[in-house]
Length: 236
Length: 340
Picture (tube, one colour):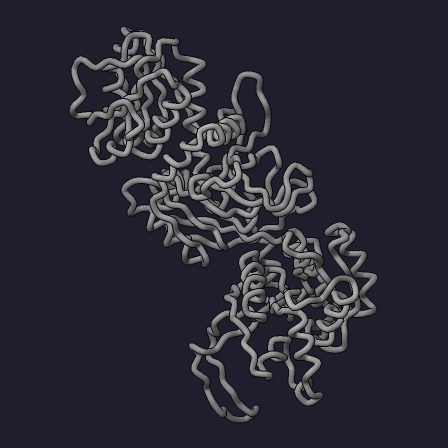
């Protein structure tokens, strides 16, 4: 079985003065979270779309799903964890509780603030996770990446081998959970995303080509871009 | 749901746009196989009148295509059903005028966005389920086949019943399809094809005879004829048809020309001929076409000869590459495997 895991745990600390977490801000009269969920909901490949929300915002999440997208028994809204990976583990625990978690269970984890993800990206994630066990969505880096200590450059990696990570990141759920459980606390402390759980254990993570417009709405500037992308449309 | 739409904004230049589509009603189809028509090429290459281009672009092209139902609120289809999309969008109904002739109707890739989209939101009435196992590369140009079905159906209602010898002018895709369908829809008629390319004419093996237009026997006569030439070839084709057709015959005009065509009205009057035009098709014609696929499984097999190029479209850049590939083809259809 395949599950979409929508990570809506952020509290929006980078979105300037907005008190509301960024996934609840509206684009074209609808919260960003709804736009994102609606990219997964019509896809029959998904058994369930699991939305992980901060505890204080679960009620609000349920309300906006009902109001803007419509209630569906294919949507579950549960509490997220303290970190991104703890949040994903909560989703896997939910699947284990409600369904049968086996070696072939796949999760497609996605940022709730990337509503421009496409059908192709989702399909390629599912196929890659089923075939290789894990995948990460990336676009080739366009800016030169510079490594430094805040004062000086220590290296300039070859740009042709550099990518910018997007989501979805997709995994065989049991493989991800078992590998995560095997990590030491020190190893867990350096994780920035879920793919790294497997990478630090030397496991292969397949690359899936993303799209430059699969943007993460993190800063007020991104919100302006997202709004102009969707609201400037010329209705035919 | 945010939907990605790939629109032509200027000749030879596409752009990506996004629109919010309502998933609470209608059907959401994922386009899978698209087919390029000459009408799409006229926009792509900018050969339409500049005023028309300014008025219609930006617009998503392609009106020939099939897809897979992913979501249906109406309960008419199941997820996974393979369907052909009807590109004509009627806005009213009329007791006498068919949906494809109503001036108020919209048409995908002409007055509304075409199928070059991530998803296509459509009413269930505009979909026809395809037979199991049909070759999707052939099914992709069902719209073009339905245009021939429409023309032949109208012919059957208009033309007198002596239909022993029927001619088809043209050796391109539309002529191939029309003459193939005439063999099935008029089983007692002899079908003769007239073209300018000997090699292409040799593909019409199902016809009862083929002739180069420069070598039409002087004694040859026809009861009725179909003009499937269009463009600059229209005037000569129509002139030849008027010359060989018997009195009170019916001429079906299918070829599109950008310019007005002069016709020999004196001979039309003297012979009492009937000329009728057909353009596009409606839901009924799509249903009839799919029934013909089911009834005559050899039709899709013959049609598979028209699949010229198949292009995998995995990225934005592949769209332009597909249109450029299509320009270079000499015969057949370019099919896009739509993976975007």
